[in-house]
Length: 164
Image (cartoon, rainbow, N blue to C red; front, top):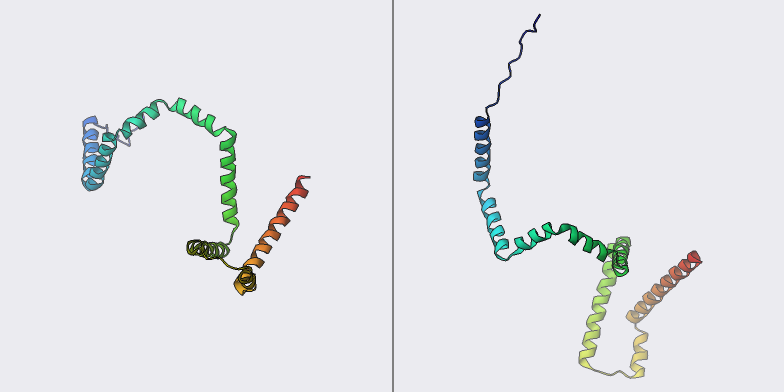
């Protein structure tokens, strides 16, 4: 016996589907008119300045460009740049923002004072320099520098022991 038909499937009409697709596209165009016009202006500008031609050429030559890029990245100097960049980001990530802010503020103020003293061109006697060494600002700076050098030396010695 034949199976009873319980479900009727509608046969899609290609013309109707095509008309619906065009209608959807037109609705989106109307809703996004400003964005589309702006995009077209940008594309026209890129075309006028031959940027699109350059991009098209790069796409056409992507295999050769990729090979050249790989060769450049494989250069020892480039590997060092990449490693140094990664180490710099790791270093910046290890710093506390407050500490870095204090150090950078001190450097900025120190450079400002350096520039001012260079412009003034005043010479100081040894007695004046000796007297300044006893100021609380100078002692704080000297203590900070000695602590910095101490920490630097600790790491150098530790790395030397680990690499030996």
